[in-house]
Length: 535
Image 1: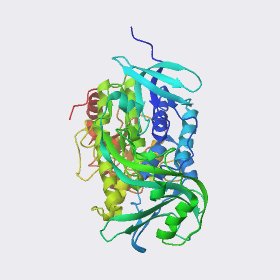
Image 2: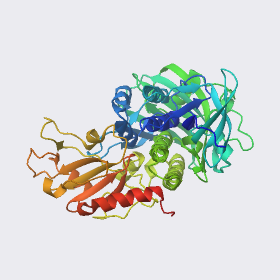
Image 3: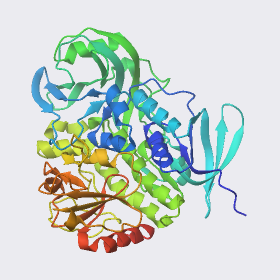
Image 4: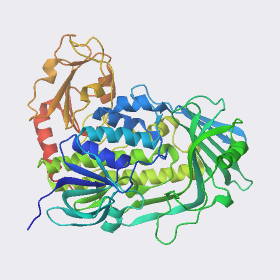
């Protein structure tokens, strides 16, 4: 006999990825429980880089203003080798990208997301760990253990493991986690430096020996607060922690092993390598950590999925890990929501692995390459490199949900990120809007209809879809639609005459089609969601 489901989704792990999954599910009306075995949020600035693509996602959620008030800009990186500046990378993006690169300590990211999720009715159940689980045709039965007392059995439709590099969910599914570990150990510290380096720039200073290998390294990322940085560097032998043994993943902070670095240990590295002399102070915390690079063979099985560090770990180069995990969560959440509501078949969930695992593989490979050879030696031109680091080039054209392309080859096609654009006007507002302003806080698919004038865009029965009509810049200002007054929509979306675009809940294009074929295109797209073709 089937058990009643006590919640739609159980999420193990309440870091940025688990919180993002909960946020995206709850704002779509899906019930979830969010558990974490830690008794409190950790006070460590582990993941600090916030990518422009993540800020776009938070904008869609209505969360971005809170983040912008807490974050600081990341403007670039100064790269020094053997005491000389060899490169200065400015983190520049095209003007139509609405957000730049930012830095925010992980504990602040978690605080902001936790408050957002609490506002939607879900609070983190702290001191509660997942012990085991079993799935069947109707759902998942999970056994939880709480510090507050005893075990509990939970019945849910789906289980998401956002429980990190040592994931219980990954192990319970029997997923492989192939890869390797860097032999080097690192120190991490949150400190204040009194140097006069340009505001918003990180530092990567290294010493390269005669054999061409890096034997000393210092990386500094600016944090909120005057002169505050998260610094990482190679560990001196006397502070080395014992290596992990057997199959245990050696990744992350080494709690309780070796010696905790002191301010003098961090100061010694700064004295050797920093491009300016600096006296360090105000150390909030320090630790030793190790880096591995691994990825699972699949992102889920049946009703159970993994996301973030439970699925992929790699060097912190370019701040890709947390941001990739947040996008994992967003990709999975809207699909689970459709299945829970009966608007798509369970086969839709197979597209999570098909779309996200290739992204994880690319990120693992790139961060390992950048960690060993330096980002300045990347083969891509600088603009492409910046767009990729910003995660604006992530796309699913080769995935099972990508419908047939339409229009110019270099135009945004199904699977690509739906670009933001500025300069949309309405007959009432006395100021121009961005497309992100129009899409903010919408939770479902959105139909964008474009024509040079309102007669071209027409009135389309979208079957209950939220519809946004955009007309050309030459349309009369009082046209009852969003007018592309700056010509930005036409420039970035490259419509081929009257054109329709279906924007997925995660901000990627689901379909692109001639406006005359809107009804057929929309029906075909949603039919494919219920039974996506296997590729």
